[in-house]
Image 1 (tube, one colour):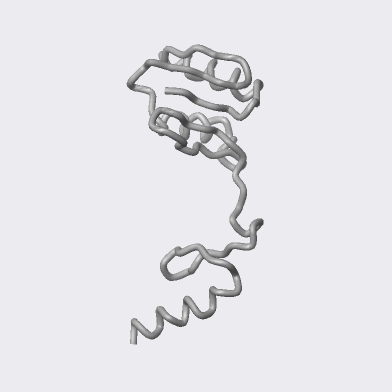
Image 2 (image 1 turned 120 degrees about the vertical axis):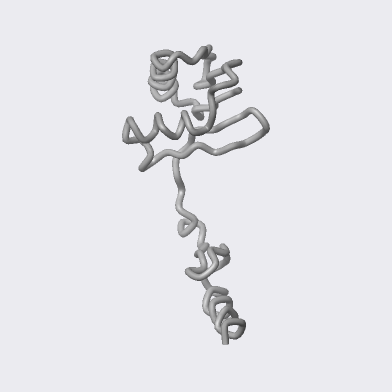
Length: 109
């Protein structure tokens, strides 16, 4: 598994310390990259690290490729002009939301 901390050396140092304290075998590379051949290490372990350190508010674990996880800053979709349907969770532009949610009413009637 490769864990990419997006060039955040401080975060990668904290994560390496946390993982080794929890008996995971990891190797830290430059640029905030952490490598592990430990098959028991999962995304849930990284999420738990974020929760325990209080970083879950601003960071998230994003699966990228088969064995690559990226820890990056959360960016709300609203910052890009998107909104989420309150009924089904579909993501769209704000201008489309009213028509989309009305369509739910047609199917519910």
